[in-house]
Amino acid sequence: DADVTQTPRNRITKTGKRIMLECSQTKGHDRMYWYRQDPGLGLRLIYYSFDVKDINKGEISDGYSVSRQAQAKFSLSLESAIPNQTALYFCAISQSGADEQYFGPGTRLTVT
Amino acid sequence: AQSVTQLGSHVSVSEGALVLLRCNYSSSVPPYLFWYVQYPNQGLQLLLKYTSAATLVKGINGFEAEFKKSETSFHLTKPSAHMSDAAEYFCAVTSPAYSGAGSYQLTFGKGTKLSVIP
Image (cartoon, rainbow over all chains, first blue to last red; front, side, top):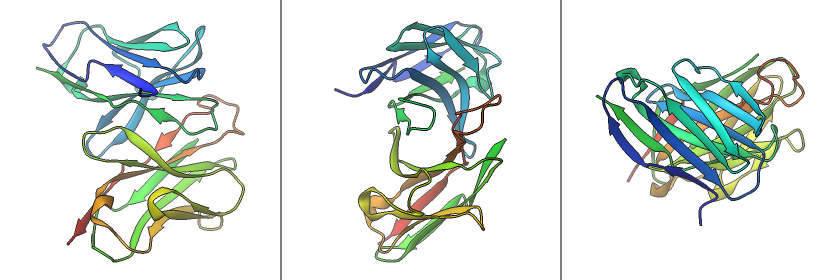
Protein backbone atom coordinates (compact mmCIF):
# COMPACT_ATOMS: atom_id res chain seq x y z
CA ASP A 1 0.00 0.00 0.00
CA ALA A 2 1.11 3.55 -0.74
CA ASP A 3 2.46 5.64 2.14
CA VAL A 4 0.39 8.68 1.11
CA THR A 5 -2.98 8.42 -0.58
CA GLN A 6 -5.10 11.18 -2.03
CA THR A 7 -8.76 11.18 -2.98
CA PRO A 8 -10.14 11.89 -5.45
CA ARG A 9 -7.46 11.49 -8.12
CA ASN A 10 -9.37 13.59 -10.61
CA ARG A 11 -12.18 16.06 -10.10
CA ILE A 12 -14.08 18.43 -12.33
CA THR A 13 -16.23 20.99 -10.57
CA LYS A 14 -18.01 24.22 -11.35
CA THR A 15 -17.21 27.75 -10.25
CA GLY A 16 -18.61 28.51 -6.81
CA LYS A 17 -18.82 24.93 -5.62
CA ARG A 18 -17.23 23.77 -2.39
CA ILE A 19 -14.81 20.92 -2.78
CA MET A 20 -12.67 18.90 -0.40
CA LEU A 21 -9.50 17.01 -1.24
CA GLU A 22 -8.42 14.36 1.21
CA CYS A 23 -5.03 13.02 2.17
CA SER A 24 -4.17 10.11 4.43
CA GLN A 25 -0.85 8.51 5.39
CA THR A 26 0.34 5.27 6.91
CA LYS A 27 3.89 6.26 7.97
CA GLY A 28 2.95 7.92 11.25
CA HIS A 29 4.73 11.16 10.39
CA ASP A 30 3.66 14.29 12.23
CA ARG A 31 4.16 16.82 9.46
CA MET A 32 1.76 17.10 6.55
CA TYR A 33 1.68 19.57 3.65
CA TRP A 34 -0.53 20.66 0.78
CA TYR A 35 1.00 21.99 -2.45
CA ARG A 36 -0.34 23.03 -5.80
CA GLN A 37 1.57 22.54 -9.03
CA ASP A 38 1.08 24.72 -12.07
CA PRO A 39 3.03 24.31 -15.32
CA GLY A 40 6.18 26.42 -15.24
CA LEU A 41 5.69 27.46 -11.63
CA GLY A 42 6.89 24.40 -9.76
CA LEU A 43 5.23 23.50 -6.46
CA ARG A 44 3.90 26.15 -4.11
CA LEU A 45 2.97 25.52 -0.49
CA ILE A 46 -0.65 26.14 0.47
CA TYR A 47 -0.81 24.97 4.11
CA TYR A 48 1.23 22.81 6.43
CA SER A 49 0.64 21.15 9.76
CA PHE A 50 3.17 20.03 12.35
CA ASP A 51 0.61 18.14 14.40
CA VAL A 52 -3.15 17.98 14.92
CA LYS A 53 -3.26 21.29 16.79
CA ASP A 54 -0.72 23.18 14.70
CA ILE A 55 -1.72 24.48 11.25
CA ASN A 56 0.15 27.14 9.33
CA LYS A 57 -0.43 29.12 6.18
CA GLY A 58 1.95 28.68 3.32
CA GLU A 59 2.83 30.88 0.38
CA ILE A 60 -0.60 30.80 -1.31
CA SER A 61 -3.29 30.09 1.29
CA ASP A 62 -5.94 32.57 0.09
CA GLY A 63 -9.07 30.77 -1.08
CA TYR A 64 -8.15 27.55 0.72
CA SER A 65 -8.72 26.07 4.14
CA VAL A 66 -7.50 22.88 5.80
CA SER A 67 -8.46 20.48 8.54
CA ARG A 68 -6.19 18.05 10.38
CA GLN A 69 -8.74 15.51 11.56
CA ALA A 70 -6.16 13.10 12.95
CA GLN A 71 -2.45 12.53 12.77
CA ALA A 72 -2.95 10.54 9.60
CA LYS A 73 -5.49 12.76 7.82
CA PHE A 74 -5.17 16.24 6.36
CA SER A 75 -7.90 17.71 4.15
CA LEU A 76 -7.81 20.70 1.84
CA SER A 77 -11.00 22.62 1.07
CA LEU A 78 -11.86 25.14 -1.57
CA GLU A 79 -14.82 27.02 -0.11
CA SER A 80 -15.90 28.54 -3.42
CA ALA A 81 -13.89 27.19 -6.32
CA ILE A 82 -12.72 29.51 -9.09
CA PRO A 83 -11.14 28.65 -12.46
CA ASN A 84 -7.63 29.79 -11.50
CA GLN A 85 -7.62 27.08 -8.84
CA THR A 86 -7.41 24.56 -11.65
CA ALA A 87 -4.15 22.75 -10.88
CA LEU A 88 -2.52 19.56 -9.71
CA TYR A 89 -2.63 19.27 -5.92
CA PHE A 90 -0.17 17.24 -3.89
CA CYS A 91 -0.17 16.15 -0.30
CA ALA A 92 3.18 15.40 1.33
CA ILE A 93 4.44 14.17 4.69
CA SER A 94 7.71 14.29 6.56
CA GLN A 95 9.19 13.05 9.82
CA SER A 96 10.72 16.43 10.61
CA GLY A 97 11.23 19.74 8.87
CA ALA A 98 14.69 18.80 7.69
CA ASP A 99 13.76 15.39 6.36
CA GLU A 100 12.72 14.48 2.88
CA GLN A 101 9.06 14.80 2.07
CA TYR A 102 7.04 11.88 0.72
CA PHE A 103 4.45 12.85 -1.85
CA GLY A 104 1.08 11.44 -2.70
CA PRO A 105 0.07 10.71 -6.31
CA GLY A 106 -1.75 14.01 -6.71
CA THR A 107 -5.28 15.21 -7.42
CA ARG A 108 -5.97 16.86 -10.75
CA LEU A 109 -8.64 19.50 -10.16
CA THR A 110 -10.43 21.33 -12.95
CA VAL A 111 -12.76 24.23 -12.17
CA THR A 112 -15.03 25.20 -15.06
CA ALA B 1 14.35 33.73 3.24
CA GLN B 2 15.27 31.09 0.73
CA SER B 3 14.86 30.57 -2.99
CA VAL B 4 15.85 28.21 -5.78
CA THR B 5 16.66 28.94 -9.40
CA GLN B 6 16.76 26.18 -11.97
CA LEU B 7 18.43 27.27 -15.19
CA GLY B 8 16.61 25.97 -18.23
CA SER B 9 12.98 24.92 -18.15
CA HIS B 10 13.68 22.32 -20.87
CA VAL B 11 16.85 20.33 -21.48
CA SER B 12 17.35 17.80 -24.27
CA VAL B 13 20.16 15.27 -24.38
CA SER B 14 20.96 12.31 -26.58
CA GLU B 15 20.75 8.83 -25.13
CA GLY B 16 24.15 8.02 -23.63
CA ALA B 17 25.17 11.65 -23.23
CA LEU B 18 25.91 13.50 -20.01
CA VAL B 19 22.95 14.92 -18.12
CA LEU B 20 23.53 18.23 -16.33
CA LEU B 21 20.65 20.02 -14.64
CA ARG B 22 21.51 23.28 -12.93
CA CYS B 23 20.28 24.51 -9.56
CA ASN B 24 21.34 27.60 -7.63
CA TYR B 25 19.98 28.43 -4.22
CA SER B 26 19.74 31.36 -1.89
CA SER B 27 19.57 30.83 1.85
CA SER B 28 20.44 32.97 4.86
CA VAL B 29 21.50 29.90 6.85
CA PRO B 30 23.19 26.61 5.90
CA PRO B 31 20.74 24.79 3.66
CA TYR B 32 19.53 21.29 3.15
CA LEU B 33 19.09 20.61 -0.56
CA PHE B 34 17.04 18.05 -2.44
CA TRP B 35 16.46 16.84 -5.98
CA TYR B 36 13.10 15.30 -6.80
CA VAL B 37 11.94 13.64 -10.02
CA GLN B 38 8.40 13.58 -11.38
CA TYR B 39 7.50 11.06 -14.05
CA PRO B 40 4.39 11.74 -16.15
CA ASN B 41 1.16 11.46 -14.17
CA GLN B 42 2.96 10.65 -10.95
CA GLY B 43 3.91 12.36 -7.72
CA LEU B 44 7.40 13.50 -6.79
CA GLN B 45 10.07 11.00 -5.82
CA LEU B 46 13.28 11.84 -3.98
CA LEU B 47 16.45 11.39 -6.05
CA LEU B 48 18.98 12.56 -3.49
CA LYS B 49 19.55 15.00 -0.65
CA TYR B 50 22.36 17.04 0.89
CA THR B 51 22.24 17.54 4.65
CA SER B 52 25.68 18.99 5.48
CA ALA B 53 27.66 15.76 5.33
CA ALA B 54 29.63 14.85 2.19
CA THR B 55 29.41 17.51 -0.50
CA LEU B 56 29.14 14.94 -3.30
CA VAL B 57 25.84 13.13 -2.92
CA LYS B 58 24.89 9.98 -4.77
CA GLY B 59 21.28 9.19 -5.42
CA ILE B 60 19.11 6.64 -7.14
CA ASN B 61 19.24 5.70 -10.83
CA GLY B 62 22.88 6.79 -11.22
CA PHE B 63 22.32 10.47 -10.43
CA GLU B 64 24.60 12.53 -8.25
CA ALA B 65 24.90 16.16 -7.18
CA GLU B 66 27.65 18.28 -5.71
CA PHE B 67 27.09 20.99 -3.12
CA LYS B 68 29.31 24.01 -3.81
CA LYS B 69 28.91 26.63 -1.14
CA SER B 70 31.11 29.20 -2.89
CA GLU B 71 28.90 29.00 -5.98
CA THR B 72 25.63 28.44 -4.07
CA SER B 73 24.97 25.59 -6.46
CA PHE B 74 23.70 22.02 -6.31
CA HIS B 75 23.79 20.78 -9.91
CA LEU B 76 22.46 17.33 -10.79
CA THR B 77 24.45 15.06 -13.10
CA LYS B 78 24.33 11.62 -14.64
CA PRO B 79 27.16 10.34 -16.85
CA SER B 80 24.98 8.58 -19.41
CA ALA B 81 21.34 9.40 -20.12
CA HIS B 82 18.79 6.66 -20.54
CA MET B 83 15.39 6.93 -22.18
CA SER B 84 13.78 6.22 -18.82
CA ASP B 85 15.32 9.43 -17.40
CA ALA B 86 12.85 11.56 -19.35
CA ALA B 87 10.91 13.37 -16.63
CA GLU B 88 10.65 16.68 -14.81
CA TYR B 89 13.24 17.42 -12.16
CA PHE B 90 12.84 19.76 -9.21
CA CYS B 91 15.49 21.22 -6.95
CA ALA B 92 14.37 22.23 -3.47
CA VAL B 93 15.87 23.90 -0.41
CA THR B 94 15.00 24.01 3.26
CA SER B 95 16.80 25.72 6.08
CA PRO B 96 16.50 23.72 9.29
CA ALA B 97 18.51 26.22 11.32
CA TYR B 98 16.16 29.08 10.51
CA SER B 99 13.65 29.63 13.27
CA GLY B 100 11.65 32.49 11.81
CA ALA B 101 8.42 32.46 9.89
CA GLY B 102 8.62 29.90 7.15
CA SER B 103 11.08 27.70 8.97
CA TYR B 104 11.21 24.14 7.79
CA GLN B 105 9.37 24.98 4.61
CA LEU B 106 10.62 23.30 1.46
CA THR B 107 11.00 25.82 -1.37
CA PHE B 108 10.97 24.37 -4.88
CA GLY B 109 12.45 25.57 -8.10
CA LYS B 110 10.20 25.81 -11.15
CA GLY B 111 11.42 22.54 -12.58
CA THR B 112 13.42 21.36 -15.59
CA LYS B 113 11.91 18.97 -18.11
CA LEU B 114 14.47 16.51 -19.41
CA SER B 115 13.97 14.98 -22.83
CA VAL B 116 16.17 12.10 -23.99
CA ILE B 117 16.61 11.72 -27.73
CA PRO B 118 17.18 8.20 -29.08
